[in-house]
Length: 428
Image (cartoon, rainbow, N blue to C red; front, side, top):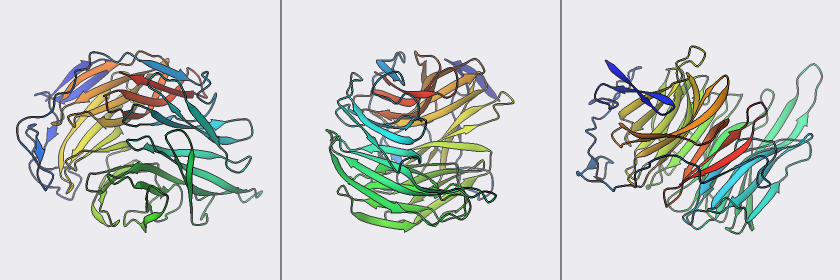
């Protein structure tokens, strides 16, 4: 039996004890996901990633989600039209952002920095070949403000009447100094198209050693996924095919642990997969979930655990929601917590970890008349601890980052009619 508890804009579907589903055994190998038991007591992790102890840091409670500031496509810092704003925050609170910048004849990428007040000290436009399209795969920034942007850049388009057009792409990684100075540009050639194009979904993050980590998977053809690791100077440290399913994917998200293992999450035609990759590129553990869902984000804890965020349910039937799951380093499911959108529709934008390692989730909550936003806090044991509505209307959160001082930065889109415009906001 479960209780329906109204929390802000959504209805939390929690167990009767207001906690998540848990399990005390290992994965059975079938559709039943089970894992190690978690009592909710956290502390210092041991060598296996299992938490011990009975105390944890205390974070400042949040009493709301009023916006410190927000920018939309009407602001000079952002494109007037384009794609989702991707965000990352350094230890000084400076925000690196990137978004596709669309014109009548082109689609390039706008990259810039925002300070803690939302002002933009610098920005630049990355332009691939004229008349073709560039898309942002993700952004990352190190504690000192050195930034990295991964881009899917179109290099060629062949128009063939009766046989369909064919497009070719490369993956580009750009590196910038804290002042916007250009440091280096890395290009990875992709295999030729099998069908219409060789586009890839991908993501970028940084390792504990400051290496740049990029994973990419094919959008259309059955082609091997890749993991790329570059040092801070743009030199290849690792470039390898991943021993994972090569099905075409709809989403890719990655996170790197303190021991430089990479958690990889993907969606392929409604099936989500989670894998843990060791520093050599070998697969330590992989599992697929056939429950129809869409994986939207992955976060890695200091204890090597992974927090995986998925959109679940059927919006058309009015029962859409999101699922937050926690996994041990060996793939055991510690718990999963399901939360249903009160309106029946929405999108879980991202998950970050607070100062005590507890997950925070940002979401879009939508109905036919408007789009709203909310943020949720969970304990490390999976219980919902707080929630707050975002003080803005017609917004579609899509990315989430957390600053060292606890400030949340949300990137996405805004507007009441399509095409939506780029949007970014800070929550103190």
